[in-house]
Image 1 (cartoon, helix red, strand yellow):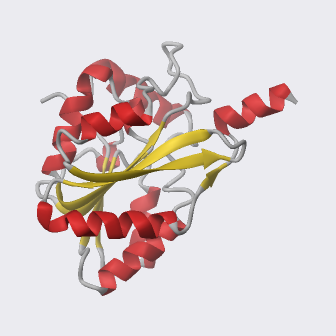
Image 2: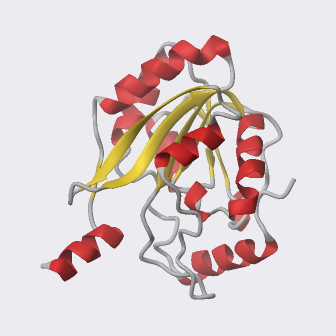
Length: 218
């Protein structure tokens, strides 16, 4: 199972090496997610979290700081510190702004890998707009752009219990799609609970590609 091509692995390693800001947002805008996880931890529903495609690992480090009793790990094959794939699944797998960086031919393999590393829930945040950054090949860093419905159809093959919500840019255009899902009927009610609570604190994106476009228009 190939989750990342040798070429894409090379390009992502270059970006991480040459651009300190690449993969460094660390779940930016997700303070509400930290608060939500604290509540689920207190209820005994979530004991472990894996941040898949963690980049420089700032999101799991943030969780470890705010939720010291939670088992938190990060995985990213393009970053040496996090290149070791976990050997067992976590209750919750987060995958924040990662899938748009995956080769089209690797999407199914990546989703299968994510399923195997998730015991209860997965939270996917996927950008549906171009990136500001470019690879050394000249291609846009977001090599896999697709509408929300396409992503939902692919994810439902592995996680039949799912729901989604739009995440908007400050300009009013949809920037990302957030998806909460599970492959287990036992966790289906947790999907809806998690989804509703996330939507109670909506996130707004600023800057980026749409921000640059807005400035140009003005």
